[in-house]
Image (cartoon, rainbow over all chains, first blue to last red; front, top):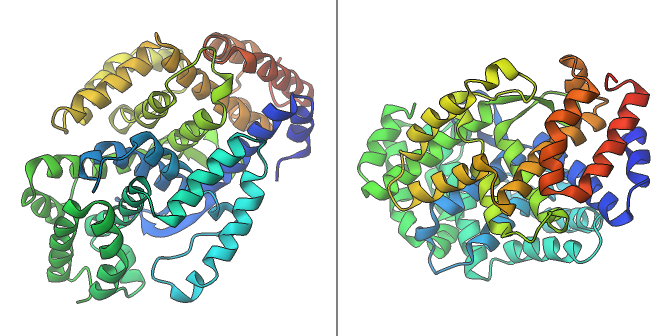
Length: 208
Length: 208
């Protein structure tokens, strides 16, 4: 909630600018949403704001590994907004199938409120980027979704399976959840991810 | 430092991909660099990874307020990489003029090492984005630099001057450091920032 003193200052501005600044301030809360993954030094869980930055940077660095030529700026835009809904809906752990059942409904309500803070056309633009990511039907969305799966695997490999071990995640679960989206959006990366999983199993970082 | 087990896995990959993944893993450390600003709930300092995400999102949301038409995807790319050098060089507080004297030298060394982890062409692309931001000579860089100044002001307004008060920062300092870049890159925002500063002074959140 925006404090009253800030709200009063914003109320005095042009309404379109005020709406944009309210949204910008509200977005700050994504830094408070904690994911199950640890950052690479293992010192704490990753938050969704920094996760979104990392994915957007990965899109630029790994662009040649996309399955098809993509609009890179669209991929980056999708990755910057794809998890904003977690401000209201919270993070849904990839392996928590029970919680996943309500994910779409929780996140749609969040999208209505958050993107609804903005006026058109930016409201529709950001909403469309989120919807495109969710639908995963375009090459750009598929590449973005693949990166969203590659990053936690890299973090787990680096931290000797910190989040896999904490939640008793097995290799078949990792393959079932990550294989299809990574093969769809960044197929050249999948054999390398598989090799990392094999090594993690050998080291005891991942249950066979 | 990448742990030996991860390094061995990466060594077995195609060298170009291995370099990109090492860079992606190294970039994770930006989440450990703490800035002087608090996130909006005041609970902790902001890290540079989440700061970079917030700025990139702001660029999309506030694009119409750029001084000149810009290449928005270039602005976003610059904001995603502009602070990567802080992994080695640390954050330099805007108001710490003594530390600022060595900033360019520290950050150039960091850029050499970090972007040097990548092969061409991506090495040169990211380095060029960082150099463009630093030089601040293009309309895209000027807009990016303006946002980098607007965001901490918004956070300070929201938190009743948490970082201004913690460091004894005065209104003339805030105006001197932030006025020129904001007026250059997003001139329509400056009167609104000034109004927020006036209100902050009235409330005692900022020393006159």
